[in-house]
Amino acid sequence: MNHRETVRLGVIGLGNIAKQHIDNVRSGQVADCEIAALCSRSPSELATEIDVPHFTDYRELIASGHCDAVLVATPTFSHFDIGAAALEAGLHVMMEKPIGMSVKEGEDLLALQPDGQIFALMLNQRTDPLFVTMRDLIEQGTLGEICRTQWTMTNWFRPEIYFQVSDWRATWRGEGGGLLVNQCIHNLDIFQWLCGMPRSVRAFCRFGRYHDIEVEDEATAYFEYDNGASGVFMGSTGEAPGVNRLDIVGDKAALSFDGERLLLIENKPATRQFSRETRDMFGLPQSSVSDITPDRTCNQHAAVLENFTGAILGNETLIAPAVEGINSLALANSMLLSTWESDAIALPLDKIRYQKALERRIANSSLRDKADIEANVDMSASYR
Image (tube, rainbow, N blue to C red; front, side, top):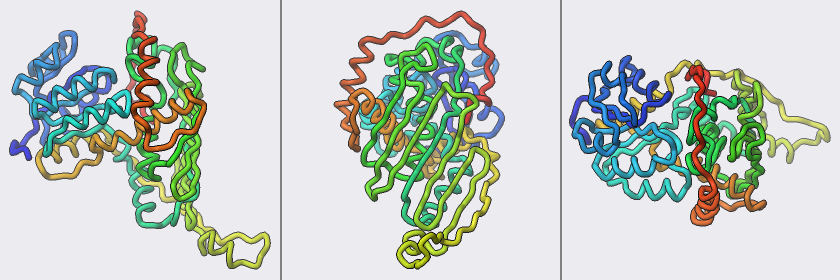
């Protein structure tokens, strides 16, 4: 419980996403929060503009006494060290996804979180009214038992320049993966948030198929769930314009999202009941289709950060506690391990087995030399 009326937030890392978070706070979209300090490797004109202290070493910001909480928006390979320093200093932590490069790294970081300390992850799509609507219907039992899940999420297209201007992105050493731990980590989080975790994963990842990178830029996976349901997930950063289609099929009803509209298809009676009772050899249960697309107007990032602030002040329950970032990371790690070993991977993931496989790849990886290219950056075009 923090008794301050305003949470003093330090931002570590001043890349594109960090600047968006700062803009959200400064524009008043995050209640009870103020920017108190900034940290980046190079001097920052933004710190002068906001009139807050600037540090070039995150440890100095953490020890400064200027902050109640920190937002970590740095490359993935630095998340553990910065998160550990902040947690051990007693600061609350909001971390950009993913929580780490592997399940083991994430769990090791979570083990440092004291009771009463707020540790959250920027899983912003959990505030999208579309997914909130779907989750509510599933929890209300509208779909009945889930029979099949399918998400084709291939509209994460990234051109070559996206990778060229970064030294850490899309390297085993800097990010621990590519498509799955960067772009699709959001979709994997929502997939398991809606449908639960599968019991096994068989995946086929393609490494550097579309880009000059060493990590995966395309993935297809088959899931099996405890109740016998099956699922398929497909992702890509090399397909344009790409597809975003999510189907969750239950015994009583189905949800179908085509990238624009969300439909609820209800069967009366339920499919299994109809199948057992009908005498019509080619019969179908009666179906009704409703367009239930919600208004998706929402600043997702601001909503998650405001919820974090509210949790620190004791007013709210976290939407995205850091511990829940383990499941999506486990799916990503399992899909890579399944590809490397050409076999199905049982869940929960054997984190040591995966860590050893990842470390072998990190040993042969290095950060790239950044291209001296001026890139046009429109962050609003990066979200799917």
